[in-house]
Image 1 (spheres, rainbow, N blue to C red):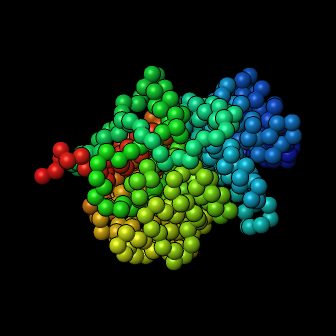
Image 2 (image 1 turned 60 degrees about the vertical axis):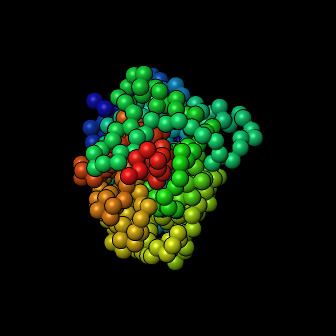
Length: 405
């Protein structure tokens, strides 16, 4: 039987969530604070954990870091819908948590019943999370603990690195690296990603145009997206649209965190805004982000409250399809970890528009749903591990002279 650990200082929440998971067939244990959670992570050995953020003795953020460095397991954060709660949740994701849900607080129409239904759905998906990515999260947590003791890091966007991604010039899928589900190769990927914030990719040759990149992610995406922007070279001068499945209030804080870790200018998108080379626009929670027009090296974006696509808004498909319609050259679509089908149609649209397409590989995806569905379309040019995505992007927009006709 799959084991679930429910961590919350509210007896009511522990009971409601524990009962829902028990009814769904899970063996459930509960903890009232982070200290109890750390101990039970060792003795109970859960397959998945739900974790409150604010608790006495040891809060959820520190509990996540300790668990991910000792007894790693997929962790789902449950947070109140406030600015403080959003920041704390993103801290927990940085330290190794995989996904989050916000608790009903009376500010919207969500109910406890809806929350428990969502928790069961999320836990079902996280219980099947790739084992190697749990180790990757553990390495991320360890790296965070180390970096927190080191001051004076230079702003990202400088330096060079060597990666394994190979951007294919034909329609065949190029697989970057040899990362199996576990073992030395997986550990090599983990070590590479842990060191990614020290170096960034450099451009080997002349850029063909100021490129446009559309990046989509869901479950497990925030920390991988953050690592990507730590590596993305400033001299690529890309315009980047980021669609990360998050509710309102979280996307603005997410954009701020990306901005602090990137050489690019990262912000939450506004309706009618223009993007220039070096700008990154993050789709706001509960709004679709579309490319309205492309003029020279600039993009104008618009926001829409149109129907949800695949049950989500913002939708990766909406952004990618609009970019495919508006951008005439230098377009790249990237899909990262996440559950569901969002992004597959967008990848097809970008490929049909003669753009380049990249999907994260199974070995480094906490949840392989979104990349898997994109790969199944037959329209993905490169499948890359998390630490090889930036190299694949750079390769897509540079020429080395040897392949020129």
